[in-house]
Length: 206
Image (tube, helix red, strand yellow):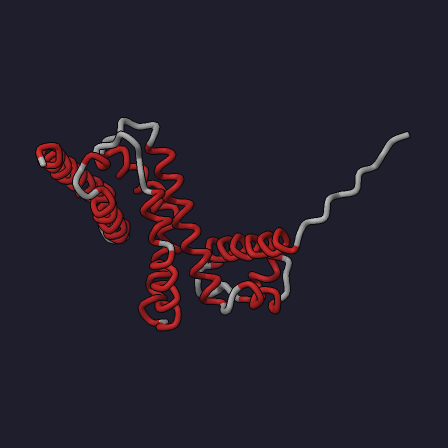
């Protein structure tokens, strides 16, 4: 006789975690397909399969959920960048190339989100609060072993400089021809490579 096993019931903690994860993924999907302005509570709940009351049970506001989803997406991008950069030679170019490729994929959404931060004070406060709370998650993940940057004096600061430059370059690409954008990128990579190489002997000597 065949014995049919009953599906194990999830605990309340597991159900809560699953619902929260579904809301975050649904929000990320809405932001990616609809944009920031058209991402509504009703559409998020529809895609997550929960009620608006359930959303407010897990997140105090729509802004809190959107910021959480955005930060989680940034952490995923960091993990992807680090994982892919590990297959390179550990050069500045390896990391910059990976960061550029991944940032280009999310640039339209990032641009819209950061523009909203400029005009929405509540969203900005929520973002700053969560960013500060998650600072350790960013710094602990952003490590490419045996890379030139890790042997420099300030690897995290240098990566932040690269990220800021790449955001500016993505904006420049909206106005300039592709050849000009590539020349700008090449000059920047060469400059950063020279800077980091200059820092490495100084660090070993100290």
